Length: 268
Image (cartoon, rainbow, N blue to C red; front, top):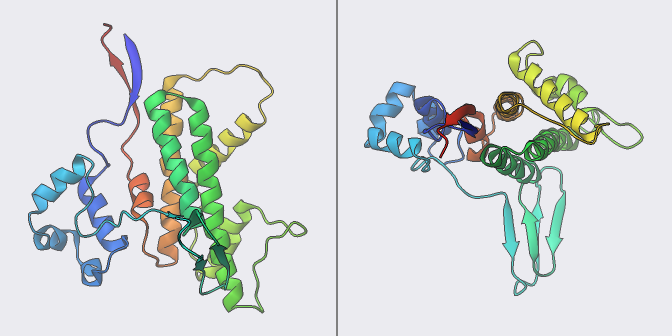
């Protein structure tokens, strides 16, 4: 029998909890809904059962899911375009055609999720390596952005990461995040943290491989794909909650990704 990877039939895990998470943390204007309980949500949303079924099939959560991406393509007819971070004063501009990243960390995480899905579809470990690398870069870009905003508002208490004074991502997560959020931290003893470190090791070992050939069992590949969810997507989700920020739906969907499983298919 041939074997392959699968995500199962449902687009996301824990359908009701996923929808509720989008209601509470999603990027939408309905602030009253953020105070609902899960039972209030089910009773307040018209035709909730139909919505639930459409989400199970992979459609967006009506009213509450913002599908705007992280990049904008600019046509040459535009004389000039500029994006600005109003807190730090950082800006980027174009004089003609090009692409603007409205959110650098989200653009990196978008490519990570795309590579994650390619790994499932093609059973291709190098795609997972790309997914892990981009997800780690996304987490660091998010933390760096928060540190720049912190430093702009607290110039006497700066958080800096320069070539002369380099700061590791682990230190940023363990020290900077609690400093900026009055003590909130990813529990270093939680499975999430362990899976994050495992993903870091996977990336480092692949980059610094000393062999010309490798082999990976499909069960091990599936396990690594699931650790991407637990060790990278969920911590990025948690970081947003520490700062009480609404969360892009891409990150919420990645945090609620279905479990990757190995299934057998009849030959022929």
